Length: 442
Image 1 (cartoon, rainbow, N blue to C red):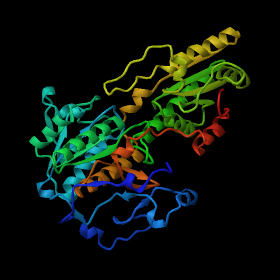
Image 2 (image 1 turned 45 degrees about the horizontal axis):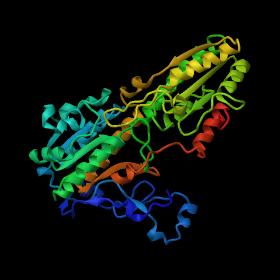
Image 3 (image 1 turned 180 degrees about the vertical axis):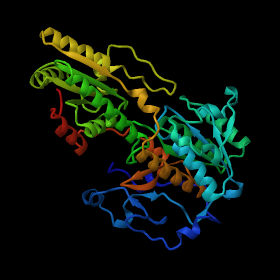
Image 4 (image 1 turned 30 degrees about the vertical axis):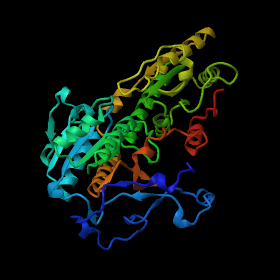
């Protein structure tokens, strides 16, 4: 990440802001502090002296993100602004919280009174699907945060960006909020491209959604904390099962695709796991330093064990099995959980060692639950940042948090690669210290 340059962090604007914001009186007198970044300041990309010094440039040339937050002057006239909101991709705790916060901020703070919800992801813009739009009002969204899922529905898969922009034109939409993960943001980038090619003034702002926490250049995506909290409960259940039977082994399979963050944070939150397997650290099953011999010794020594496996771990072990793709073109991961349970059973049987394997997969129970209090607060603050950015004419931008400050991240940067666990990080070291497992099974 040290190669990131100032231009990589530049955020597109639709034009100069000539309208005084309804929030201007609140902002007068605010100054940069430990808890507030002025709109003309930058949030530095580097967070250590060594990283900053390695660039060999003066302090005023260090790369930084544009801070999020309200501006004293805005681009859109609230009384004449029409807004669209869409939720895309898989379910995630907090979707309804974000929708609610967007609507309430737009109406109560800015005075925008025409807000439309598009149904079932990007399909909602395409005429052939026949999905109607929803008029989103404060009364309609008043209590939706109490429920999981999304009142707008969702879907996966690409749609023609020209057709999407045609729909925005027909409805005279000025701002589009896209709530989704990396695939949804790539779709938003294509929509913004078409808008720019047509020379139109429509802002496209993304709120990053994924329980996997795999979006780079933001500290955390919403829904992640709720997800790993629920996964930690499953680890606790697996521990109860494992300790309640002779040589009990609990295997917990959690979501995360190619990033092991849910597995790691759930393990740290619970501390009952003996082994954690993640996609970022290869695993060998047999041999002197393999997983199965280590697990066997652990069970013999302690009488039980709990194994947490991220869904993308050990995919090379399943290389001979067929694979498919979902509607978004993502490769569907092969199911490592049952495979691992069978290999454990075979290993213990071959050594005539009594064992009782219990398999728990809480994946879809995690995605559809309401957000916990932390994520609810985070969703509200992300939504507020998104509204401020859009009303100020920012476009092709993702709102997120970097070094605990809310910032604007260009979409192109947010989809440039996948955020993954660094095996050299203090996070992975904390997990190794908690479980007592070796750094690798190799």
